[in-house]
Length: 218
Image (cartoon, rainbow, N blue to C red; front, side, top):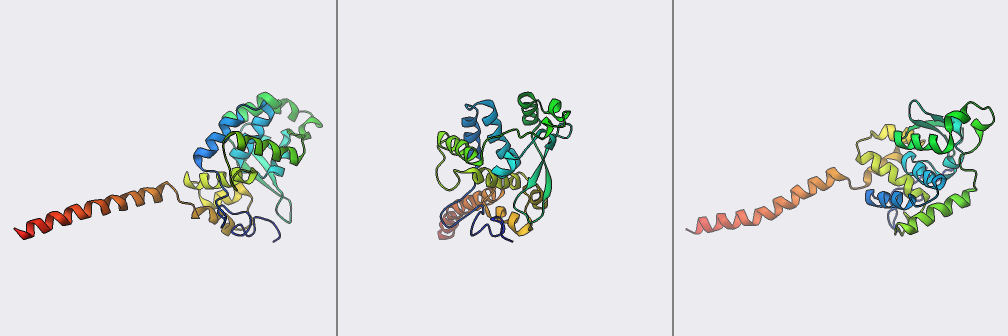
């Protein structure tokens, strides 16, 4: 397959030999905080990328007709597949409420013309610049300081929160499970907890061993 998601270890994966390409939890929070200073439409564009895992072109293609206001979900057209594939991704209810308030989704859904007008009618290059500007304001540098940093951060964060990898595959529009499984390589909270127990056991052992040696000498 010719998409950039097909071989993420070489191209678009969560990791790369030159550094990670995903935003950490704290970096995501900083980006969202920086986005809060933007005009409402651009702020919501950043939040859509962060909470849906959408590619930048997929987010820019969104229209009011793509939102289910009852289920709090959005339907994304996967652009990296040979055939057109639609995928439904749940969104935080507060984000859906803000999208409704700013873009009047429900009202526009009733109009055959306005239902299919893009929410963010600017060019992909403009979308890139909005994301880069927010990254700079948030103090994010490196390979993760780009739109796919938000996408990869979504993937890593979802798995660390316990979302099944098969479900995340569907949310992200991957053709192969092996692509999604790459996010499993990132160290998560459970691994850190195991490591801490290991560190603590290593710290205790010398003290116990020393006590045993002193007891044996008497």
